[in-house]
Amino acid sequence: MSDRTRDVSITLDRATIDFQLFSDGGRSLKSHVMRRTVGGRINADKTGHAVSVKALNAVTLTLTPGAKIGLVGRNGAGKTTLLRALSGIYEPTDGKITINGSCASMTDMMMGMDADASGRENIRLRGVFLGLTFAETRAIEPDIEEFTELGEFLDLPLRTYSSGMMLRLAFAISTCIRPDILIMDEVIGVGDQAFFAKAQKRLQEMIHETKIFVVASHDNEIIRRFCNRVLVLDAGNIAFDGDVEDGLAFFDTRIRNAS
Figure 1 (tube, rainbow, N blue to C red):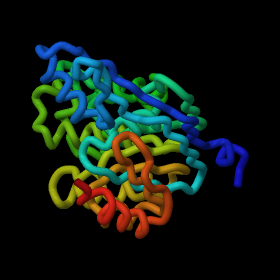
Figure 2: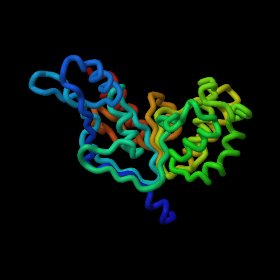
Figure 3: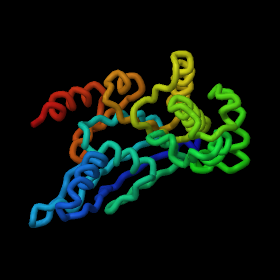
């Protein structure tokens, strides 16, 4: 194993992430939306009003090369928050998160793109957002053009694209680099059958080459296909960390159907 591979890791040391909420009744909708988005437990003051969401609760976790993690949990368990923490998007409000190695998050592939800019301009915008230099984005542009099969549409504003065309472009940009760490929220399906097959082949190669892979999914077959370890998240806590089949069984019997 090379020194570079040995250095790749993600460590959470009692990492806690709290989101502050408005406490008056007029903000109850925002509180509800935040709760459904980030998961975890709502903390209330003495009046019973929601004041914060503990999306992650003192989570301790170490991921090293070879870890292919399937993240499982009910809606609102805090999976999205954990994915964003592992990507370096969220900072802990308490504890520590250390990420060593290049990281690509495919939880929001459109982030950093501009609807009024052309497809080519968005390649550069998204490339820089992913940490590439302008020279590096120019170097990968021909590969992206060939892979997307968008042709002259690359010179048109993104707002003229169909949703499928935008997803093709975003997917091609996000998978044109080979990071040490890959974070995903569900495995992505893109475009028509022919393009879907090409995209899946590219994605499988990327997963195989990455040192650490984490995917949140409700599809057990996806977990079985790509992962060698399961984390079960419940109310911002890791309830299980271990074998894939044992983890899926634990979720089905202890979490999914719990009152």
